[in-house]
Image 1 (tube, rainbow, N blue to C red):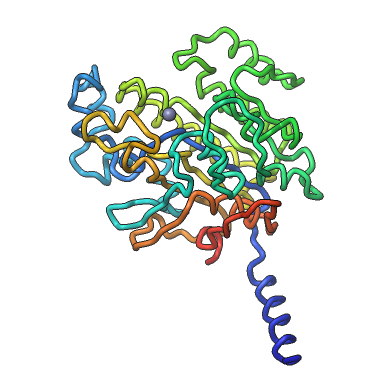
Image 2: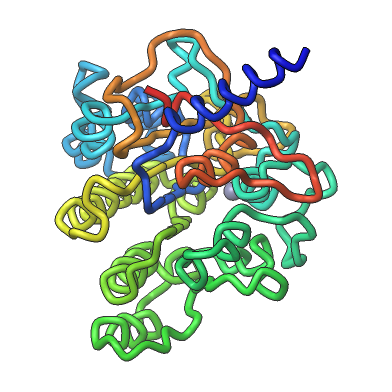
Length: 358
Ligand SMILES: [Zn+2]
């Protein structure tokens, strides 16, 4: 028994040594309510050709249509399908039976973001209202860890994030909607002026301001963990504006490409940063107008996707084998990438080892 115990300790020690990740920084980006159907299949012809949803059908088709699905998805998400598909991994193509699911039963935003960041699909979290989240999130866990203090930052378009991440308790830096950007950097002062003067088609600041605020903050203050939460895709889908939904998705892909280009050009981040892109929930299929909606009553709305790229992620590209991952596994994954073990007073799902184990 003693020998067995010793062997176990040695095995554990060896295992830790071999699983040390190279990742020193984690960048997370979410596209709100972005369907896996477009991520893996590009623009959907049935919705694209319906002038009820796509007013400028020929213009939008010109931008995003190709008869070949592989080329079509590249047109919509060039960064995902040129860069991540070459150097990283993409999970959630259900046409290969590769599934990523919400574990929470609600399939809307607050429960989804709660699940991503707390690792706990708490059924008591069932509203999008501005309620201070009782659950501990992985960002505050990392932010309290030695060496990471004040090195975690969040920029979101939606103004509910301070509640989801409970800034009152967590003391995380969260800049949401048009929260004033009180920084000395001239670029951040300019973005601050612009965010108050821009039109707001979706009622909160456009995603491009959230992006630029995050990018310029990253350049000026070099956070180790950065989270950017985009919002437009969900709003345009609800509005039934498929052309705008595609345009926002395409623009967000370009912003992620721009961010990755900065990351790989900066000595602080280059080859030491893992980028994870995902979403909070799915949407319905093209039957009726279910693609516009999500929630418990919409079949398929709990189907999501994950993309990952970084020094610890094998360059496998699209995962074409059967599998099942859950959104709740992301919280522990973000910590594990940094060689940290996320724990809380509530249950936390196990990390997705496949993202960082070669
Ligand atoms: Zn929504």
